[in-house]
Image 1 (cartoon, rainbow, N blue to C red):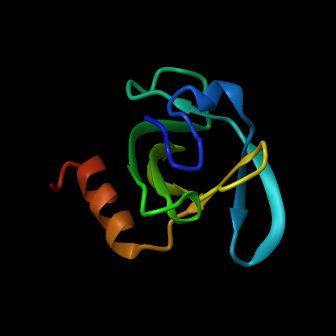
Image 2: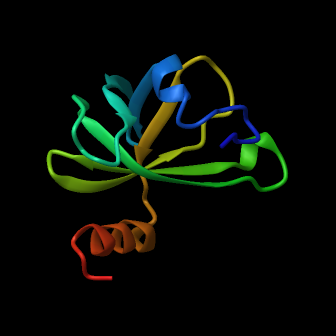
Length: 108
């Protein structure tokens, strides 16, 4: 899958540096993330599903990386539009967070 901004998933997990950011801080941290629906590889963030929505132009894409971190569901969002690093953060969308947690916990 390719976003309008040029990210190619799942290949980019091996080809780019992923950094966790937040809305409250300019500080970022490199994370160990990868495509791993079986949860068997050595990642801190195991991506089990990806959803992308391209809306008009590259600046408007939104990509959700549904992940498992420390045994818990985490819905990360990528809205990166430039640069070599992919900047992700936990989504602020409560509906997406709750829906993924319900699916993860088998409450669907």
